[in-house]
Image 1 (cartoon, one colour):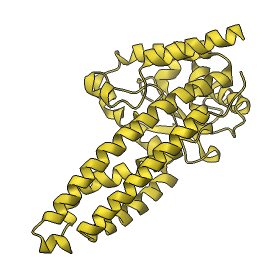
Image 2 (cartoon, rainbow, N blue to C red; image 1 turned 90 degrees about the vertical axis):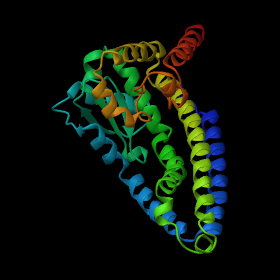
Image 3 (cartoon, rainbow, N blue to C red; image 1 turned 180 degrees about the vertical axis):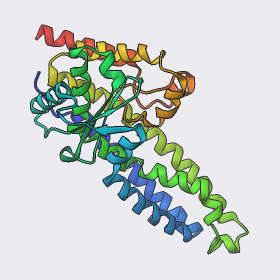
Length: 293
């Protein structure tokens, strides 16, 4: 199956970035109108997020307790990722392993040349060879689509808004706020709440579509969509047997995982991924198309 440029993904990324940029300009206008000290907050957070962008791979690996592993430690895993990288026309990424029972995998890094693909020991113990290849190909598709960089940039506005929402009353104080008895700071906080909600929903929608795109890309790399579908079902079923404390500790990485941690109504409402059932249906449809071609 030949890799094809996903114009649907690119279009959605562009449209989401356009809406976020428009939202950001309006938000900045409100901050300037209410209290100029907020501009300092935006500047501070911009520097912080730029640093996060360049060190996101190290932050993600540390949060998961993952470490880079050599070919001597995991020779089969290295060979698999090296071969799949060649098939995807990508530089071989750094390989990392996290010692946890939670079966999962994720990719991180700001570019194709600085990417890292990480797996958990729980995943290595759960999947067979074809299923593991499907998961690794899915993560490499994220790298090829530059999803990590795009999602890091897209989260900029939501992070700024949340920071102001939490700490706005502590940092407020100048201009219209001092003269207006606190009205300016209230407007800024309300604007932060609106911006956070809108950007949160936009980013979640983009995140769900990029998972579909990575599923299709992974299937294009291996030519085995059924193997990835089987892996998704296996991982999803295994999540129910992982201790709750392990799930709580690692749920903050949901946006990066191949299958998110978390069940229930709230988790489904704000999920970063489509449902496993829907992803499997699409992969099965793709397998049928490949067989009939």
